[in-house]
Length: 370
Ligand SMILES: [Zn+2]
Image (cartoon, rainbow, N blue to C red; front, side):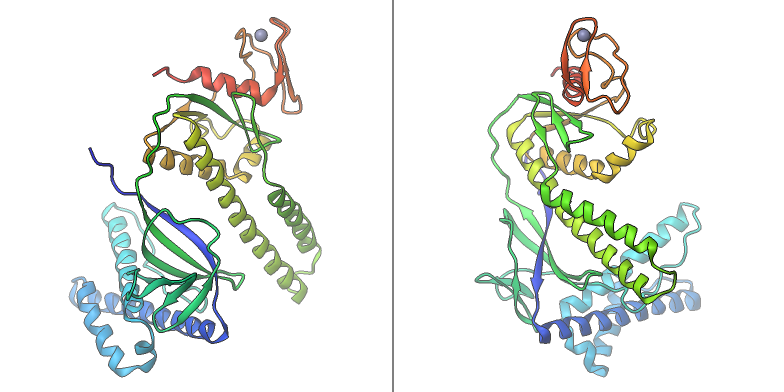
């Protein structure tokens, strides 16, 4: 049986020069207008005829607009046409929800600044987007400096250029991955969310949050405090809010990179990784712990780990999260402890262990042997 090909997104910072940046910004504006008018056309047509307008019909309109409006002609044709796919998707989602008996709002028009990305639907030599030496070549834009901080394993299919709120530009490359040949591995490991660490393995290994991420999180707290002290409606408050948004974005990137790194390593090393299924508890009784889990993006990490494991012929098993902290991993006695207690010390069998390490062993034990 051949496995389906995996598409993975790789995100890289790009550095367009002034001229390129102004072109890209113009394209965003034009694409936003194409989007809004295509949406309006669909709406009008439906109200007039009771029928839906197809994307093919809209392509004809786009062609005509190209002849009439020079700014539409400026935009690379793939990029302009891709806008119509987005409209189609928004519309199809809308109708699916109507048919399901929901009352969705009509697909929204995009205001200034709300259209944030441009998609080249073909990637490769001589196509809309490609690599040239170590630069990203975008047709009609030129060679753009790109920070390729990770290796790409596979073939790039689609390239989306994105401007984030911070004003930084990124290229998101959809990559069809080559199958990686993993050696057979039946070793099973338990993995627990750490309170102090990011995670703890059942072999006692601790995975710490990287220092730069911890530093960014401390800075985030400072920025949050500073925002709350600024007067409502003031310029300084707006500035502080902007700074805070940028910091959030930075942390998102740092965390995602970290998750990629750790999940790659785990999938490489283990045949089966056992974790708690945190969705089935009502998000862990203790609010404080629940918060620290969501902060650490645990759910996102687990889904990343799961798809990587699956595409490598490995496995992630989710077990019910009951009692893993309180139970003694050696004798099975219940040893009650609240969150502040860092050590599992069993009065029955004498086992003394880091609490998260004890939990990770319990998680491993709960795995269905297979
Ligand atoms: Zn014990």
